[in-house]
Length: 195
Image 1 (cartoon, helix red, strand yellow):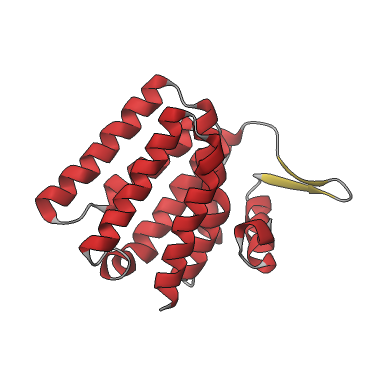
Image 2 (spheres, rainbow, N blue to C red):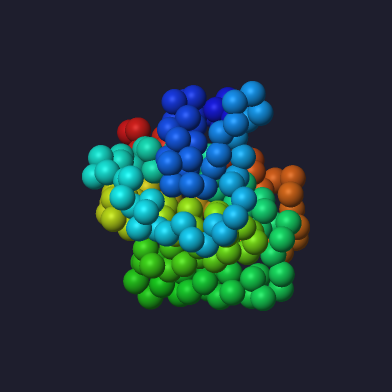
């Protein structure tokens, strides 16, 4: 997985470890790592937040998103129903309206978009993980993003196109390009963070 996502193996192991610690994943020696069965809704965001530290860097948050979010969106492409598409479309329209009126969009609207996509995946674990990632984004990364990757109109345009492409893939059931498009955007963001 590390090679496929172009992230370090320790990052993948760390993500798996955290997900195992909060009861989402289960490792079986000789068999691999699996999503635990049972009532996933009992896993609370607060339990996950207890494991988080104040030390997550913007790069680490993007690395986690790069590993998880392409799969979330791929599942949304596969499982979304018309109501999901309608709600995601509304949120994208809100983002565009905010850009037109204020030159950018809010962290809340961005978070709602990504959380709604995760909900469309039909997987409660992905939904809860995305809620947590958006908490991290809001608390530790948003100021950096609006001062960096979204600071100019060209980067903001690219980011809106990224969101539009997510919706397009879901609407058109485009399984083929969803992951590569997601990875390309996260790679761009990582390069901006490294500069």
